[in-house]
Length: 94
Image (cartoon, rainbow, N blue to C red; front, side, top):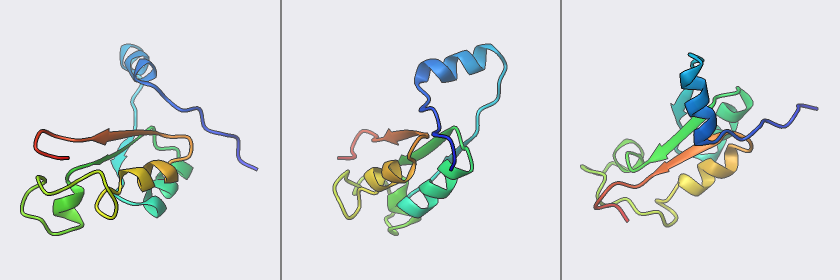
């Protein structure tokens, strides 16, 4: 059985930067991909408003909300069992 992954915080990332340690990051818009990224040991999984343009076909990120079914952030976070997930909402996004 795999050992649990330590959830990284912004303090960890700051320390990594100060020590010259490189971090890995990737964007994941859904549960299965976030799960694979977590299992691969990715340090930071990002999910934000670009899901609207990349996955939903919107012209901008403005129509994206944090509510299902558009709000995929929560499912990405669930898939990233131990990894850090950055959920990003820009001005104009809900």
